[in-house]
Image 1: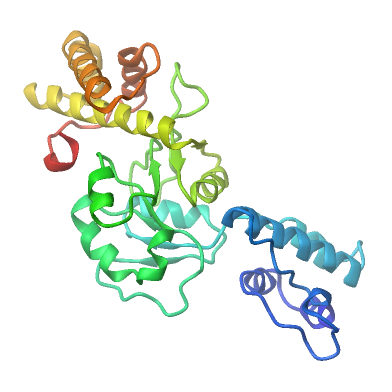
Image 2 (image 1 turned 90 degrees about the horizontal axis):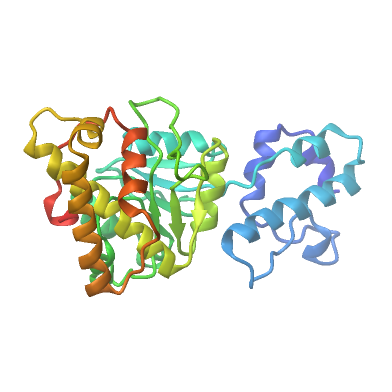
Length: 308
């Protein structure tokens, strides 16, 4: 009774229907006999989303027949949670392209949408826009924020009561608006360097993988070490590059290797001493390997209060 009219709809329409539960319809004894199942509350949000699609596809096969085109179409749906995306720049647009067409993208002065998806809220803006973004998001949705900025955000997020918010260390690069992102893999880290931690970490990883990008889901201790490594990299390479006007990241890695390596080692020793962070072996070598993968990037000291 429920499946028949849905079977006549397009796949995109049915996909949208998955994102909202529906009550039991007339003639159905309980909501369990409807197409939509109530997902388990003890599952991670991204797991609940995947489970719902799987359960729905099984019910469609039973209702419409395993050979039907409807069942086949549903099985091809990727479990990428629909999201709100703050930021219309290179990274924001790339995030939208990684989705399944159900995302809402917001620019700085756009109001919060009443029909915002109940998924992650990616913040792909400059650091100086964070106050305005957080203020715009309803308080009961702020736990869904996913911060993707460079720098040490921990003290800032704690001040905002968001110390447990999801964070992503973005190592993929988008050369210009509309380009496909290039994954952050190196000759020393072929598995990729992008990492995430928090409530929506798995959902972020699934979104990135939808475009063939790597992403590690880390515990808090390992994520903090990775965050400091990237902070050390960007602080060191940008500062050394600024000392040598016109130098790119590749120039610093090739021509000023000793200078930048000494600075990274000094910063890592300080972080280990004062923050208790344990870094993996060959830190300067690994960070120089990343520099080779983005050798064309320019160097400049900016967002100083966040990075140094």
